[in-house]
Image (cartoon, rainbow, N blue to C red; front, side):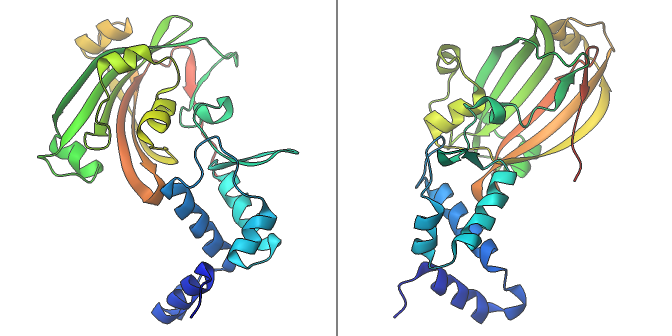
Length: 255
């Protein structure tokens, strides 16, 4: 009987459909993602060496390297020269802002500040439930947050999180925390946001939005709706942000 997880996986895939068979390095990538999802290696921790992983999966180091290269390109792993490969964490500067595409026009990195305006637990509205793959009777945590850059209000976020996953997230716990929000999700709730999808449109500021962002009524704002996913493409956050772009622009790289 086979005791090699990769061989067992390959045999299963082949018996299911030869047309669905994927390259060997992609199968290794899938197995590494499973280990990351299970928490075998925590954010910020080193993963085993390519030699150790090659021995574990009974494949060549080149195959393992190609799988790791793809995960590094997707910002799920970080290579550090002379130190090894580490699980990406939102506590690290190069990862912290990778979902935030708002860039200052002058190119200078502003000083950021965050203020939680509201934190409540409510039944999921129908549109939020659909995006988070929940039932409308399920509870969600709803946060309202104001981000400032150089002490100027710039982003008003409306954030929705699955209540069952984020039990214990309160206004008090958020007030005590000083790091990045996604870092808190990692540390306290074991949720790593690994990819996101966004929709963007132009809107006019309502009176309440204008007051909070300190702009004139009907000022143009950039509305960004983001759905963030953890491993296994499981949606974990809906974020609807209103951006003041007077000193900023939205920058993205298209591949």
